[in-house]
Length: 117
Image (cartoon, rainbow, N blue to C red; front, side):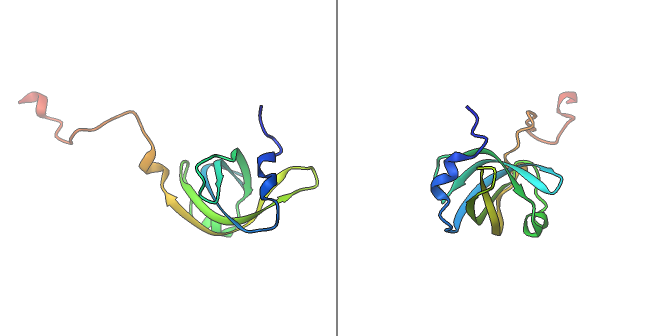
């Protein structure tokens, strides 16, 4: 079952700032789509996919697909009953998606004339 209201965030909706970690998936207009959101450096994923407003600090990171970011924010419930992560600050890229991306091609060396010898 898909948690479209992000109800797993409900227990964090107490107005306290927490540390969040998420993987950037792609930009969407003025928002960014993130996946695998965790709270307070816990290993369990709280939200599989979430849309966050791309504020100036996010934009300055020039995020690429697969980049993992860490930031502080609060959880609020909006008028539609959805739990959202708001007022993010202190954004930091903690790993690059290019480091973890597996293209399926493994290069052993750059000496391409080995077969002619």
